[in-house]
Amino acid sequence: MLETTIESLLERVGLAHTEYPTATTTVSSVNGENVYYYEGKFHLLPQTFEFPRTGPFGAWMLWWFGDKSRGYPPLKKIRTIDLPTSCMSKRYSDWAMMIQHLCELITESGEHIPSDMTEQDAIRLFNIAMDSLQLPPSKRQRRLSELSLTTILRLVREVKAKRQRLNKHSQ
Image (tube, rainbow, N blue to C red):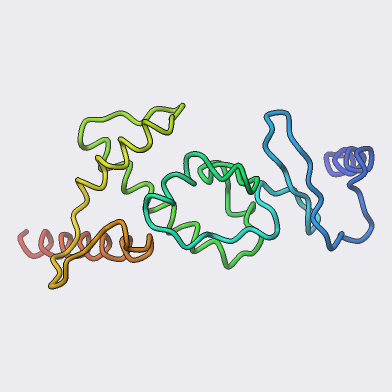
């Protein structure tokens, strides 16, 4: 019953096809964000989406605000089914884990993360999180702004693993 209703609605708006279209169909939603139809499903990201090579600040801003020039919604709104390929799920998971870690650092510092984040709030809170970030010591001087998101996430995981090992041995 539900499937029939969905199919009839898709047919009514001109999106029902016996074969899946090879091109992406873009539909604007009420709130101005785009919805993309490809491979027989609706997605919040276009089929051409790729995670940008960026550092933690770029990822933080894309997470909260998206990229309006490219029609990307805030990445906090997407789910893995919105990604154009299933192999992007790992990268999305890494981004989500890094953002979650930054949010934990912010709340541990006594700050509140607003539900209606402004760019000013985002920048201020990001700086608080980065100042609280604990990374393993290095022989070389690190510039956090120049490290990739995946590198920082790897270093954060190393610190957590070391802390867990120390806690395990001290008990």
